[in-house]
Image (cartoon, rainbow, N blue to C red):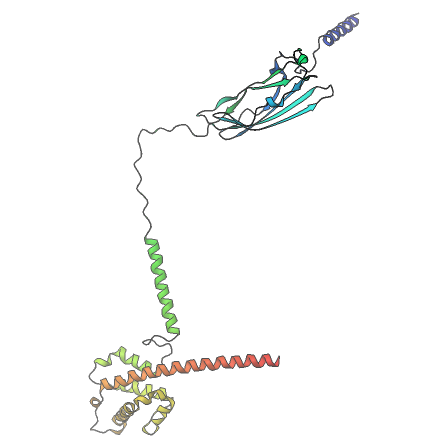
Length: 348
């Protein structure tokens, strides 16, 4: 019995529910609460200055209602802090001949706030137009324009700038940073010194330094040795000085020199021919002093100044002669290499 009563009550409940059920909300008349029938999709937080706000609006129009596309707002500024950048509308017919309207709004914020707060996009007024152009039909209730209101939508706007920072005491102006002059000066001096060293080395390799020949000969070495010993300040030569001069002349001749073989010196070293008389006189005097034991000859009879003069001239002549010989040797070597290359190319 209880089961039968329960089944009767359940059946009665279902019948009452079906009797008072309402269909899906659509805009059907000219006086309706359109806000409850409009679907708005929009993110309502996380916005700041310059952000784009995407808002999607969707609603249905009952059969017989025609949406007015001219009621959709145009692109442009809405107020002093909001612009409507883009609007896209799509209208689709449903199976029951009602219309589905989809509108996409793109808003851009051009304002900021000091603290995060909720800002509202203004409400949008849309409308329908009469389906029949007949003047009589326009006066009917079904063909009167229907106002559709998209309610204002709030979103949370965040500040861009930090809160104002107050200072009770102002910091003094910091003096400008001093330009580092020591480091560039050190680098400049180092580069200058390295450049001078490289230039000096290059001149030495080219044998362009008169007082520092690259490959000095025996006479040049002798002149340097006598200058370092300060012989020019001496009144007379000593025995070591004279032996050094003899040794340099023998090295230039490539053999030991005697009075009867002195001519070999000028054959082997033709650059000494300009000072042949002075060299011959010096050699014979010092030879007689060492080996002939002539009492009338003394070491004081050999003039220091005159001897140093022909030694300096001979050193310069020797250097020039050796430089010429070096250039000639280089030219011959280059010619030999070129000839070998040509001969190899001809044989190939």
